[in-house]
Length: 507
Ligand code: GLN
Image (cartoon, rainbow, N blue to C red; front, side, top):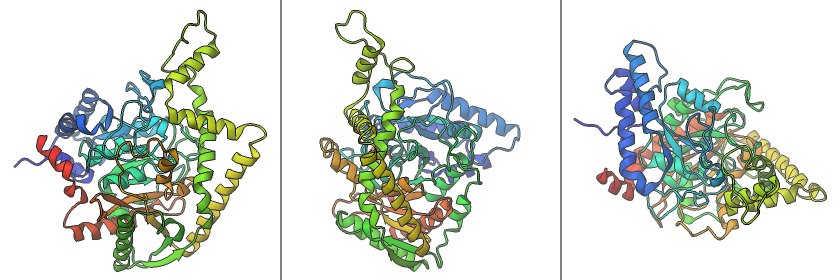
């Protein structure tokens, strides 16, 4: 009997590897073959490292054959968003300005993947410097949604969501500054977790907005996300914002999947108006499933959330304008000589390089951020946004007095068509209306599939939010919901993806 290894979850692969029923090389090769068959259509990857992944797999097989005790995910391959520094592997952040840059060091989370013996298959596509909700701002062309190749896979981490949704990798790493792990998960029918701010090291994560950025798991099941969260989480002396405390018991929570007596708060401001009817219906049904599983429901109000998007689009550009100043043509990547200037000054080279190297969305945000931070406007814009940020954190604190977790739809709509929102930045920004508050407050959040919207048969996502360092609650609720929904559907949601079935036949 031949089993398609790419259809297995990470937990299943780990068991097969531990039993010796498959080798790490076979697992890596199966995923690389799948990529060769489908990634021409999906475009999840910016860079595939077949040779490196197979070498890491062989090393795991060799160590296992000597009887060495290995990490439980040893030999389970993974794809990494191209915003994480990887030694010896190109890291572009989806930007022309970093084309050709090969970091001399690994991000801490990459080091942890390597130490666990997890072969790195490649680097996934993303909106340039993680600015966007569709991957259409990638300088290397968009990724596509495996449910419908004419639609977006979410962003900025659409490469990481589509890579797991198209079975090219069982696991991927994403980063979430305003929703870039959760919204892509929602629109591709996959699972994504943004851990508590400081729960996963940011060392080697090329910063978009340092006070908001957080790396986390992109997977097909809640248990897989927990297993990966445990590998990458925990204190790192190389990141001064890293929390010096044990990783919350996420794997245990995912296995227990218990919500009896848990108080679930529905956030009034994050439901109803502005949410697609089919998204709202699936959300309401999911809440009912949790009630059937023994949870209690309360309604909570977070009035300051109305200002979250506005505050985010001042704080993020401010931090980004400062973080991106280092791309100056002197230290990394691209260097462009200005046209028709015989002996250009350093400033002229910097200007020409930044003009050629950055895309429109990045320039838009640098201009916004520079303006918001300029003397005379600082208090009115950046200062006010920071006050709103405090009010949002206060709203969460009050809501968590009444509820153990908060829930909402993850994204207001299902996947939209490529090109639909490209010329309307405001429409693009509104995708993250429900995810941004968690980043502003530093709390953890997860998106789990909640079924297909009736009107377009596309995936919808259910968002779960918990207090800081209570990440385990996300996994308890997520796993409970996943168990009930897969039972109701008679299988995993990705089994119902039509374009995926077509590409599977090709493979
Ligand atoms: N879509 C949001 C933005 O464009 C979120 C991005 C992210 O989380 N990296 O800023």
